[in-house]
Amino acid sequence: MYAQSDNYFKLTFEKKFIDGEANQVAYINFPDIVLWGYFEVTITGGYNHRLNKGILKKRFAMVRNTSNYFSDLTEVPIAFGVLADQWCIGDFDENNLRIPIYHLSSAGNEIVIQVEGLIRKKSNVDAIIANLNISDPVIVSNSKTRQYMSIIQDRVGIGTNNPQNKLELANLNHDGINLDNKFRLRTFGTSNTFILEHLADEGDLYIRSKIGPDDSGNIVMNDAGGNVLIGQTTQQNSDYRLDIDGPVRANEIKINLDGADFVFEPNYELRSLKEVEIYVKENKRLPEIASAEEMKKGANVGELSRQLLQKTEELTLYTIQQHKEIKKLNNELTELKKVIVKLN
Image (cartoon, rainbow, N blue to C red; front, side):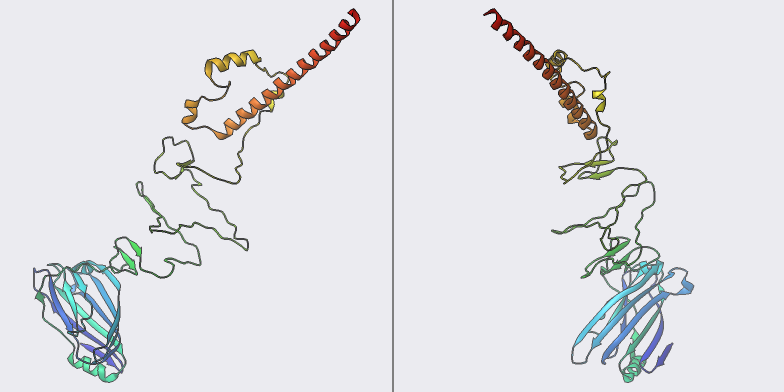
Protein backbone atom coordinates (compact mmCIF):
# COMPACT_ATOMS: atom_id res chain seq x y z
CA MET A 1 0.00 0.00 0.00
CA TYR A 2 1.30 3.46 -0.82
CA ALA A 3 0.38 7.15 -0.90
CA GLN A 4 1.94 9.81 -3.12
CA SER A 5 1.61 13.54 -3.81
CA ASP A 6 4.31 15.45 -5.67
CA ASN A 7 7.39 15.35 -3.40
CA TYR A 8 5.83 13.17 -0.66
CA PHE A 9 5.44 9.40 -0.45
CA LYS A 10 4.27 6.82 2.09
CA LEU A 11 4.72 3.06 1.68
CA THR A 12 3.39 0.35 4.01
CA PHE A 13 4.61 -3.26 4.22
CA GLU A 14 3.64 -6.24 6.34
CA LYS A 15 6.57 -8.49 7.18
CA LYS A 16 6.66 -11.81 9.02
CA PHE A 17 9.97 -12.92 10.48
CA ILE A 18 10.99 -16.52 11.22
CA ASP A 19 9.06 -17.93 14.20
CA GLY A 20 11.03 -18.63 17.37
CA GLU A 21 14.28 -17.09 16.10
CA ALA A 22 16.13 -14.08 17.47
CA ASN A 23 18.87 -12.01 15.78
CA GLN A 24 17.17 -11.65 12.42
CA VAL A 25 17.51 -8.77 9.98
CA ALA A 26 15.57 -7.55 6.95
CA TYR A 27 16.58 -4.60 4.78
CA ILE A 28 14.65 -1.66 3.39
CA ASN A 29 16.30 -1.35 -0.04
CA PHE A 30 16.43 2.05 -1.79
CA PRO A 31 17.01 2.64 -5.51
CA ASP A 32 20.30 4.22 -6.64
CA ILE A 33 19.02 7.78 -6.99
CA VAL A 34 19.64 11.20 -5.51
CA LEU A 35 18.18 11.26 -2.01
CA TRP A 36 17.77 14.79 -0.73
CA GLY A 37 15.19 15.10 1.99
CA TYR A 38 13.52 13.66 5.04
CA PHE A 39 12.62 10.01 5.62
CA GLU A 40 10.81 8.30 8.48
CA VAL A 41 10.62 4.57 9.23
CA THR A 42 7.89 3.40 11.61
CA ILE A 43 7.38 -0.12 12.96
CA THR A 44 4.14 -1.23 14.61
CA GLY A 45 2.97 -4.65 15.70
CA GLY A 46 1.33 -7.22 13.49
CA TYR A 47 -1.15 -10.01 14.27
CA ASN A 48 -3.53 -7.52 15.93
CA HIS A 49 -0.69 -6.27 18.17
CA ARG A 50 -1.20 -9.20 20.53
CA LEU A 51 2.48 -10.08 21.00
CA ASN A 52 4.21 -6.84 20.08
CA LYS A 53 2.16 -3.87 21.14
CA GLY A 54 3.91 -0.55 20.75
CA ILE A 55 5.68 1.59 18.18
CA LEU A 56 9.24 2.36 17.09
CA LYS A 57 10.07 5.31 14.84
CA LYS A 58 13.35 6.58 13.40
CA ARG A 59 13.92 9.73 11.35
CA PHE A 60 16.57 10.37 8.70
CA ALA A 61 17.57 13.78 7.31
CA MET A 62 19.63 12.77 4.28
CA VAL A 63 21.74 14.27 1.50
CA ARG A 64 22.98 11.60 -0.92
CA ASN A 65 24.28 12.13 -4.45
CA THR A 66 25.06 9.41 -6.96
CA SER A 67 28.60 10.90 -7.04
CA ASN A 68 29.22 9.30 -3.63
CA TYR A 69 28.55 12.35 -1.46
CA PHE A 70 26.57 11.33 1.62
CA SER A 71 25.55 13.02 4.87
CA ASP A 72 22.70 12.33 7.25
CA LEU A 73 21.28 12.99 10.70
CA THR A 74 19.13 10.50 12.60
CA GLU A 75 17.02 10.35 15.74
CA VAL A 76 14.54 8.03 17.42
CA PRO A 77 11.59 10.22 18.48
CA ILE A 78 9.30 7.38 19.62
CA ALA A 79 10.08 4.02 21.21
CA PHE A 80 7.61 2.48 23.62
CA GLY A 81 5.77 -0.72 24.40
CA VAL A 82 6.80 -4.35 24.05
CA LEU A 83 7.66 -3.83 20.39
CA ALA A 84 10.46 -1.40 21.25
CA ASP A 85 12.15 -4.19 23.25
CA GLN A 86 11.97 -6.57 20.28
CA TRP A 87 13.12 -4.46 17.33
CA CYS A 88 15.83 -2.00 16.29
CA ILE A 89 16.01 0.28 13.23
CA GLY A 90 19.59 0.62 12.00
CA ASP A 91 21.37 3.46 10.19
CA PHE A 92 21.32 4.05 6.45
CA ASP A 93 24.01 1.96 4.75
CA GLU A 94 25.33 4.29 2.02
CA ASN A 95 27.33 1.52 0.33
CA ASN A 96 24.39 -0.85 -0.06
CA LEU A 97 21.60 1.78 -0.09
CA ARG A 98 19.56 0.15 2.65
CA ILE A 99 18.26 0.49 6.20
CA PRO A 100 18.39 -2.67 8.35
CA ILE A 101 15.49 -3.76 10.57
CA TYR A 102 16.78 -5.95 13.41
CA HIS A 103 14.62 -8.45 15.30
CA LEU A 104 16.13 -8.74 18.80
CA SER A 105 13.99 -11.51 20.32
CA SER A 106 12.26 -14.72 19.29
CA ALA A 107 8.76 -13.38 20.06
CA GLY A 108 6.44 -10.99 18.22
CA ASN A 109 7.63 -11.97 14.74
CA GLU A 110 5.09 -10.12 12.59
CA ILE A 111 5.28 -6.35 12.08
CA VAL A 112 3.98 -3.54 9.91
CA ILE A 113 6.68 -1.28 8.43
CA GLN A 114 5.85 2.18 7.13
CA VAL A 115 8.34 4.24 5.12
CA GLU A 116 7.48 7.83 4.30
CA GLY A 117 9.43 10.83 3.13
CA LEU A 118 9.51 14.28 1.67
CA ILE A 119 12.25 14.67 -0.95
CA ARG A 120 13.38 17.30 -3.40
CA LYS A 121 12.44 15.86 -6.82
CA LYS A 122 9.11 14.34 -7.82
CA SER A 123 10.92 12.03 -10.26
CA ASN A 124 12.81 10.54 -7.33
CA VAL A 125 9.51 9.96 -5.53
CA ASP A 126 8.32 7.98 -8.56
CA ALA A 127 11.51 5.91 -8.49
CA ILE A 128 11.09 5.15 -4.79
CA ILE A 129 7.44 4.14 -5.24
CA ALA A 130 8.43 1.78 -8.04
CA ASN A 131 11.58 0.26 -6.58
CA LEU A 132 11.73 0.50 -2.76
CA ASN A 133 11.31 -2.96 -1.23
CA ILE A 134 11.96 -4.96 1.94
CA SER A 135 14.04 -8.13 1.76
CA ASP A 136 13.18 -11.40 3.41
CA PRO A 137 14.70 -11.75 6.90
CA VAL A 138 17.88 -13.72 7.52
CA ILE A 139 19.50 -14.84 10.78
CA VAL A 140 22.63 -12.85 11.67
CA SER A 141 24.85 -12.37 14.70
CA ASN A 142 24.58 -8.82 16.02
CA SER A 143 25.00 -6.79 19.18
CA LYS A 144 22.09 -4.44 18.61
CA THR A 145 20.15 -3.35 21.68
CA ARG A 146 16.91 -1.59 22.36
CA GLN A 147 16.56 2.03 21.18
CA TYR A 148 15.20 4.46 23.78
CA MET A 149 13.05 7.54 23.51
CA SER A 150 9.92 7.39 25.61
CA ILE A 151 7.97 9.91 27.68
CA ILE A 152 5.68 7.22 29.09
CA GLN A 153 8.08 4.62 30.44
CA ASP A 154 11.65 3.35 30.32
CA ARG A 155 14.36 5.89 29.40
CA VAL A 156 14.62 9.21 27.56
CA GLY A 157 17.88 10.31 25.96
CA ILE A 158 18.60 13.83 24.70
CA GLY A 159 21.95 14.15 22.96
CA THR A 160 22.55 10.40 23.36
CA ASN A 161 21.08 7.29 21.76
CA ASN A 162 22.02 5.06 24.69
CA PRO A 163 20.65 6.60 27.90
CA GLN A 164 21.38 4.74 31.12
CA ASN A 165 18.92 6.68 33.28
CA LYS A 166 15.24 7.65 33.19
CA LEU A 167 16.20 11.06 31.76
CA GLU A 168 19.70 11.67 30.43
CA LEU A 169 21.12 14.78 28.74
CA ALA A 170 24.53 14.42 27.15
CA ASN A 171 26.91 15.69 24.46
CA LEU A 172 25.33 19.12 24.41
CA ASN A 173 27.10 22.37 23.60
CA HIS A 174 24.47 24.40 25.42
CA ASP A 175 22.74 24.43 28.81
CA GLY A 176 21.23 21.05 29.61
CA ILE A 177 18.02 22.57 30.99
CA ASN A 178 17.00 26.20 30.68
CA LEU A 179 13.47 27.02 31.80
CA ASP A 180 11.86 30.45 31.96
CA ASN A 181 9.20 29.29 34.40
CA LYS A 182 8.96 27.17 37.53
CA PHE A 183 11.19 24.07 37.65
CA ARG A 184 10.79 21.26 40.16
CA LEU A 185 12.52 17.91 40.64
CA ARG A 186 11.12 15.37 43.09
CA THR A 187 11.63 11.83 44.28
CA PHE A 188 8.93 9.90 46.10
CA GLY A 189 9.10 6.89 48.36
CA THR A 190 10.54 5.80 51.68
CA SER A 191 14.06 4.88 50.54
CA ASN A 192 14.76 7.07 47.51
CA THR A 193 17.88 9.24 47.24
CA PHE A 194 18.05 12.44 45.18
CA ILE A 195 21.54 13.26 43.88
CA LEU A 196 22.61 16.49 42.18
CA GLU A 197 26.14 16.00 40.83
CA HIS A 198 28.65 17.88 38.70
CA LEU A 199 31.14 15.30 37.40
CA ALA A 200 34.08 16.87 35.55
CA ASP A 201 37.84 17.36 35.80
CA GLU A 202 37.23 21.03 36.62
CA GLY A 203 34.43 23.54 37.04
CA ASP A 204 31.95 24.45 39.75
CA LEU A 205 28.37 23.68 40.70
CA TYR A 206 26.26 26.80 41.22
CA ILE A 207 23.00 27.01 43.15
CA ARG A 208 21.67 30.53 42.71
CA SER A 209 18.43 32.42 43.31
CA LYS A 210 18.17 35.64 41.28
CA ILE A 211 15.09 37.79 41.89
CA GLY A 212 14.59 41.41 40.91
CA PRO A 213 17.12 44.01 39.77
CA ASP A 214 19.48 43.39 42.70
CA ASP A 215 19.61 39.61 42.11
CA SER A 216 18.43 38.95 45.65
CA GLY A 217 16.56 35.79 46.52
CA ASN A 218 16.45 33.13 49.20
CA ILE A 219 17.61 29.54 48.95
CA VAL A 220 15.51 27.47 51.35
CA MET A 221 16.86 24.11 52.51
CA ASN A 222 15.00 21.53 54.61
CA ASP A 223 12.35 23.95 55.84
CA ALA A 224 10.18 21.04 56.98
CA GLY A 225 12.91 19.34 59.04
CA GLY A 226 15.97 17.20 58.52
CA ASN A 227 19.64 18.11 58.58
CA VAL A 228 22.13 19.50 56.06
CA LEU A 229 25.47 17.68 55.76
CA ILE A 230 28.56 19.09 54.01
CA GLY A 231 31.66 17.00 53.36
CA GLN A 232 30.09 13.83 54.75
CA THR A 233 27.16 11.48 54.20
CA THR A 234 26.45 10.42 57.80
CA GLN A 235 26.32 12.11 61.21
CA GLN A 236 27.76 10.98 64.51
CA ASN A 237 25.16 13.13 66.23
CA SER A 238 21.89 13.91 64.43
CA ASP A 239 21.04 16.76 66.83
CA TYR A 240 22.85 19.22 64.53
CA ARG A 241 20.81 20.81 61.72
CA LEU A 242 24.01 21.84 59.89
CA ASP A 243 26.93 19.39 60.09
CA ILE A 244 30.17 20.28 58.27
CA ASP A 245 33.24 18.06 58.07
CA GLY A 246 36.02 20.58 57.46
CA PRO A 247 36.96 24.20 58.18
CA VAL A 248 34.48 27.06 57.82
CA ARG A 249 35.30 30.65 56.90
CA ALA A 250 32.95 33.64 57.03
CA ASN A 251 33.26 37.42 57.11
CA GLU A 252 30.57 37.67 59.75
CA ILE A 253 28.63 35.22 61.93
CA LYS A 254 25.75 36.31 64.15
CA ILE A 255 24.52 33.97 66.90
CA ASN A 256 21.34 34.45 68.89
CA LEU A 257 22.11 33.89 72.59
CA ASP A 258 21.30 35.11 76.09
CA GLY A 259 23.80 37.44 77.75
CA ALA A 260 25.45 37.10 81.17
CA ASP A 261 24.17 40.32 82.75
CA PHE A 262 23.02 38.29 85.77
CA VAL A 263 26.64 38.47 86.98
CA PHE A 264 26.07 42.11 87.90
CA GLU A 265 22.92 41.43 89.92
CA PRO A 266 23.30 42.27 93.66
CA ASN A 267 22.44 38.73 94.72
CA TYR A 268 24.96 37.04 92.38
CA GLU A 269 27.21 34.72 94.35
CA LEU A 270 30.71 35.43 93.07
CA ARG A 271 33.26 32.82 94.03
CA SER A 272 36.23 34.00 95.98
CA LEU A 273 39.56 33.90 94.18
CA LYS A 274 40.66 31.27 96.66
CA GLU A 275 37.74 29.05 95.60
CA VAL A 276 38.63 29.62 91.95
CA GLU A 277 42.25 28.74 92.64
CA ILE A 278 41.31 25.47 94.32
CA TYR A 279 38.86 24.57 91.51
CA VAL A 280 41.45 25.24 88.78
CA LYS A 281 44.09 23.13 90.55
CA GLU A 282 41.68 20.21 90.86
CA ASN A 283 39.97 20.39 87.42
CA LYS A 284 42.48 22.15 85.17
CA ARG A 285 39.74 24.45 83.84
CA LEU A 286 37.54 27.34 84.93
CA PRO A 287 34.20 26.67 86.65
CA GLU A 288 31.21 26.26 84.25
CA ILE A 289 33.58 25.71 81.29
CA ALA A 290 33.55 22.31 79.55
CA SER A 291 36.63 20.12 79.72
CA ALA A 292 38.95 19.57 76.76
CA GLU A 293 37.60 16.04 76.30
CA GLU A 294 34.02 17.32 76.17
CA MET A 295 34.97 20.02 73.65
CA LYS A 296 36.47 17.40 71.34
CA LYS A 297 32.95 16.02 70.94
CA GLY A 298 31.71 19.45 69.88
CA ALA A 299 30.97 22.71 71.64
CA ASN A 300 27.90 24.91 71.46
CA VAL A 301 29.37 28.19 70.19
CA GLY A 302 26.52 30.26 71.58
CA GLU A 303 26.69 28.65 75.02
CA LEU A 304 30.49 28.83 75.05
CA SER A 305 30.38 32.52 74.11
CA ARG A 306 27.94 33.18 76.96
CA GLN A 307 30.16 31.29 79.42
CA LEU A 308 33.27 33.21 78.33
CA LEU A 309 31.33 36.47 78.64
CA GLN A 310 30.30 35.40 82.14
CA LYS A 311 33.95 34.79 83.06
CA THR A 312 34.93 38.16 81.59
CA GLU A 313 32.25 39.89 83.68
CA GLU A 314 33.36 37.96 86.78
CA LEU A 315 36.92 39.06 86.05
CA THR A 316 35.64 42.65 85.90
CA LEU A 317 34.09 42.21 89.35
CA TYR A 318 37.36 40.77 90.69
CA THR A 319 39.22 43.76 89.22
CA ILE A 320 36.77 46.19 90.86
CA GLN A 321 37.22 44.38 94.19
CA GLN A 322 40.99 44.52 93.86
CA HIS A 323 40.82 48.21 92.94
CA LYS A 324 38.83 48.91 96.10
CA GLU A 325 41.26 46.87 98.19
CA ILE A 326 44.28 48.63 96.64
CA LYS A 327 42.65 52.03 97.22
CA LYS A 328 41.96 51.05 100.83
CA LEU A 329 45.55 49.90 101.28
CA ASN A 330 46.83 53.14 99.73
CA ASN A 331 44.71 55.16 102.16
CA GLU A 332 45.98 53.10 105.07
CA LEU A 333 49.54 53.53 103.82
CA THR A 334 49.05 57.29 103.62
CA GLU A 335 47.76 57.42 107.21
CA LEU A 336 50.62 55.20 108.33
CA LYS A 337 53.15 57.56 106.75
CA LYS A 338 51.57 60.49 108.61
CA VAL A 339 51.94 58.62 111.91
CA ILE A 340 55.59 57.85 111.16
CA VAL A 341 56.28 61.51 110.40
CA LYS A 342 54.77 62.57 113.72
CA LEU A 343 56.82 59.98 115.58
CA ASN A 344 59.99 61.29 114.04
